[in-house]
Length: 323
Image (cartoon, rainbow, N blue to C red; front, side, top):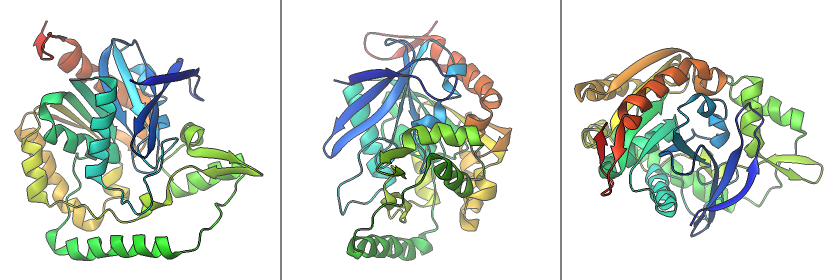
């Protein structure tokens, strides 16, 4: 059963939250929850190298009838790092989500995912379609296809990087002052405002003698060796039964992060969503617009949750019916 550890107040204007800890075979997946215990469940998944603080400013603007649980994915924030020798990959994160919702005893729920969290949401929704009622992808396409001809190079690079990492003598983490840690994060993530950086560093730093160190596992920077093609992505997409809302930022992922070869896939993925009558919208802002300017994103997400989730009731068998 989920253990509620203590009440905490975030650096944002968010209301009181509860801290959640879910046991996993290698430690804990930690996070926090907003909203009533028996509200309609929404699982919130952050992006690469971020943590659940990415939702601090958005969730307070969303429907109060929902129960939002945001987790730090393995190797991020306050969650345990994967064991030595273990790769970080999308299928592993999907399995972690199943562990979390099993512990929460959620039979059917919605997912709100940003960037990498949106890709995990897409794959989970395809593999466990009966469990997901609605899925919101924030500046994410739900899948990250790779050209099959690039697979050998990418897989080898990921393995070489891991083996090289394991052979390096242990280095002490660089210690920062809080101010220098903020500067370091802003330099690495130019789409963040200073306030947004502070929201992420609330869970992204660990106090040590002489200052703070970043909490995330360095191995999340290594190449993800578990890749799928565009054809496989579209096949998975076709299996999603949940209502889907894709919210893209006009100065977001595709402009600043996507590799050139990936950009040719995005239009086909969006066409796949539209073909199934899912919603795709674009808002002004950068990759972290949901955190920097949540008022731009909140109305879209709120309307979607009201129309696709809150307008229905949950039956005893776990299915939903429209009011």
